[in-house]
Image (cartoon, rainbow, N blue to C red; front, top):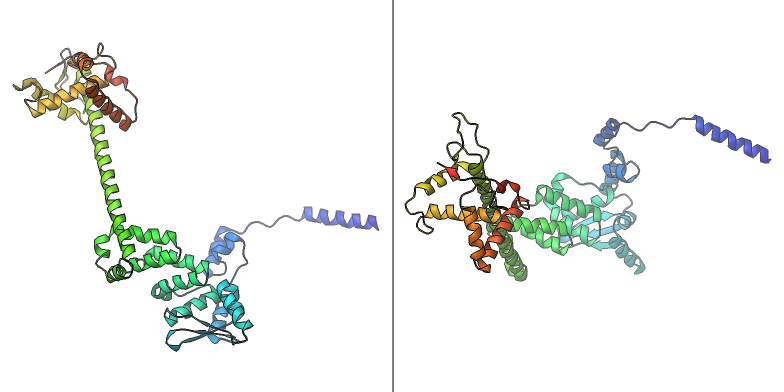
Length: 383
């Protein structure tokens, strides 16, 4: 008997080893199934069984025909929707509890859903059957469906409502109402989208009827939005200030590079006294060079060269002094007055010296360097 069992096991294992594994389904076949509605993307990702379009149609028919329906759903204006208790109970834990209560009390199974349009209730209950909806219905009832999906705990529909609002159903006219619903329905991502849209388009949004209604019904929320607007405006000003400061520091760094380039290598018709200028020179790679060349020429010929006497000369003095703070060794430097400013730094007060050091630190940090050796070599220029 044991030998027979062993032989059977050997045969089964041998057969399993000889049969090859089936090849994977081609991607084109998967995409064609998706297009035909035979396989849902969620079923492929999570390993669920394939649900055909025909089966979904059958569930829709079950809802439309209400065959064997044992639950009555009462809506506004005397509307009635018929449904099946087992479907509602499986789709919504809240409805399951309501139906259980109704059973224990011995009454006929019924649920009342008020405060939303009756047609929205129909779309909601239909979704509980087949997990689908018409595009027109979603566009018309997206806010009631968001509320119903939250109240009756249907997370899949709630996510779909949020997704559709994020894809274009959220407008400047309804953003205030959706924002209030998102806060009530615990939809943080949606509330963030609304908050950003309100702040970005505040002037237009604040003129809508929804904003005026919110002012009367939720003045605290309006106050919070206004405070957020002021805070965002202050942040924007700070960001703009930092961008402007960064641009200034970059321009100063480029000016320092161009100054050393002119004093060391020469550029166009200006440079060291021993520089032999060629007629056809290649374009200069330093953007600040042309402006600095004009400033140096003015500085050389100005009659009010003393600091404070001329605005342009004052800028040139400041650039030369800034270079001296950036330069590592004035004995090798070829920029004019570098050593003089180095000696002057030692005589300045500590407060003034710290101011220049802070400026140098910010310039180098903005450029992302510690201290460049490019500032080490230059010589007296000639014009």
